[in-house]
Length: 233
Image 1 (cartoon, one colour):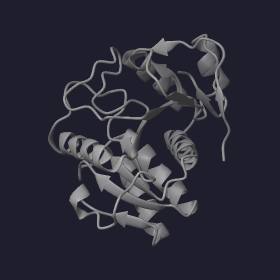
Image 2: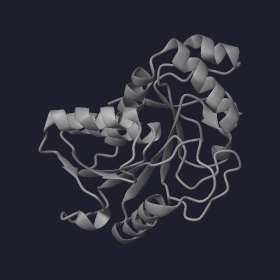
Image 3: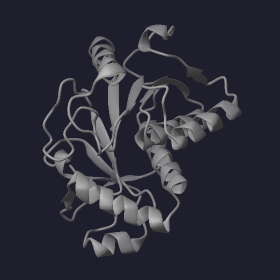
Image 4: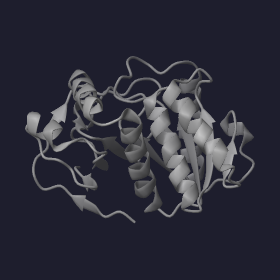
């Protein structure tokens, strides 16, 4: 299991516009699918430390959703039961690619359903929900199926006392101000990717994962590179 360490130096937090520029620079040097694979693997390693019996991945149509599906793949390899629930059928090419890889694995550990009501197994405090619905580009209140999945996840968390782990930025949380929109996922932990986001400043249980950005990305932005997974607050 990957070691998680406390990061001693003060860390810089970036706005969503700044993160987008950093991401674009990183993708020019490292293939996007490689970064996604790294992100999903780090998330799976992080989730594993809680020793879950089942993991429910609620995923969106963009790259944040793709990261969540990669995590699902690695959790299955760790012999953990995984349930995946989409927020949209209209997903991008990266999400389609990751869905195909999951289907090709043809694992009995994977269950694909349309909504929380289709879950037949009883959920309890040893289970975990991964929120990989929306990332740092989210804007405004979550709507449609996104809003429904957030509300249902929050209800299940309250009823079953399970944990919710958000990927990069919690869905419904403003990535710049940290203000909670309506609805907002009731997260317990956040694993943010590459660099810290401004909206996560002063929040508890925030972790930062190195997903393979080249050293130059960190040097150009005058920040410390995280190695592995580091606890930043």
